[in-house]
Image 1 (cartoon, rainbow over the protein chains, first blue to last red):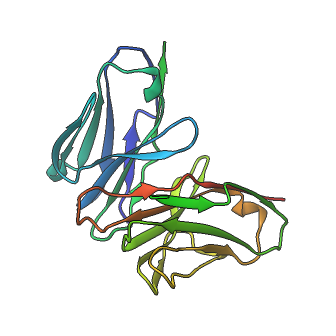
Image 2: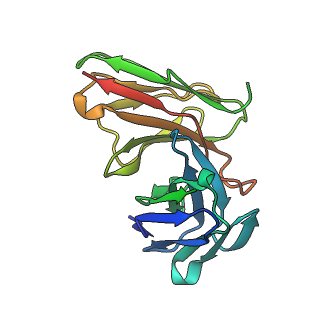
Length: 108
Length: 114
């Protein structure tokens, strides 16, 4: 099955800094999503982005499907951005395979 | 209430007991999923359903049973709970890509098997 690798596993930032999270996947995908799990455990869908670029406020994502990676950009980070960011993909079905996540800590 | 709701939020049960986790969504999404989240393993798919009366196994289905008699409900049953099934369980739904939005998750059920 498809393998998903996220990097870095841990990231610590000062408030206001920018960051880039990476997701590599091992096979062609037709579905790629980014999620944020907040410190209370809630999983929030950030982007549905099997290809191309999308932006939502301070967050943006780019998927280069031909090169099998996706990037999540967080600009001007805030303490509320802390949590774990997951990339999840599927290659022909609705069943998503999740990466292990990037744990982000934003310090005030 | 609109959205996807899971119940109970917390559950403690004894080894060998049967327990059912509930999931209800109000969007009439065709797809529903059950994942478990464990330290070191991330989120792993247990079962999913593409429509009412259509279910299929995911990555870790052993020890679990699902049913989907109505589009809006997708209960997960642990037939005889074991300590290894202590986990946080998440239900999710999606419309199969028709709106390009993706999955929406419930708030999770924290299950402890003692």
